[in-house]
Length: 129
Image 1 (cartoon, rainbow, N blue to C red):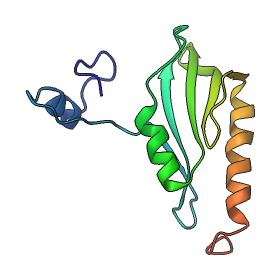
Image 2: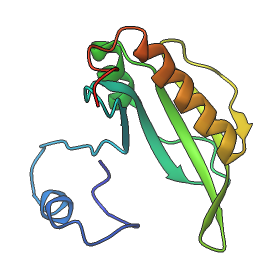
Image 3: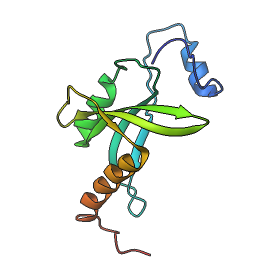
């Protein structure tokens, strides 16, 4: 995690950890999609506000995703008038894509629904009320 926090200040733990004068690393997980029935993780994602940048560090997210055998993504999101209007998505695991895909919000919802549908094939609680 970057030593200086430029966005989303106010997370007291994050600010406390960033102020430590040592070599203790820390990363927050931006997104972990889950099954609402059984709570199993479906994917990990590193997210970032889209200001035209080409990359964001994703090494730890990729390591965690591989260890958990989960797909993972880098998601750049564009906001206009306080609404998310589009995404640039790059798959990180299981295969790292070189190119990003430009998607509308509804298309990203469909991708997340597909991950849920695949999980439903093995979900132990999919029929629970």
